Length: 252
Image (cartoon, rainbow, N blue to C red; front, side):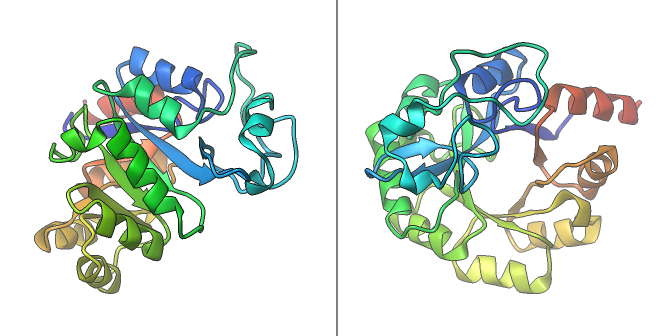
């Protein structure tokens, strides 16, 4: 199957998202591409966390940037799903911890989640510190490898200026002539539309213009079937094992 399933925030359907437990589970089950999110704490540390607030997936409350690293890592990760097992040791890792743990054995798709202008520079320095630029020239989904993404074009542009040899993908709602033109003008390498909006025509057009394509926002089997049939190279998904079985059955 020439289609890459990217474990979204790790294997987040079965373990707390953006935790080592979720990323380790993805690797153990054969998924070496995974997506994660980077934000900055109150005391200027990079953490792997998605939401603007800690309320949904921890026992705490409030904005991420209103917590110090010590406060963030003291929170209990409770997850967004009803998991079959408990994960009492799960905590919010730093980006440095993540990059050190998975060096040489994964392809992170690292999303610049928050809007602080310092974030792209801090992430670039962390990638350099842990040797991830050594695998920057690999193919789109090779592991080890590295990709930086964001919904925020200005953040992604800042990052591309600092990491010109790293693949950068722009998360967008829909592929159009305008988004393809903008991505090329800003020097991005790929465009990542919401899976439910992708079409074979729009994906083919992006490829013809020299951009890579993968999806995001898989909510159901219809979304998965649509992005797969569009010709995109892959997608993020919270349940990659189940998605693999679904696609294999669809191909039979």
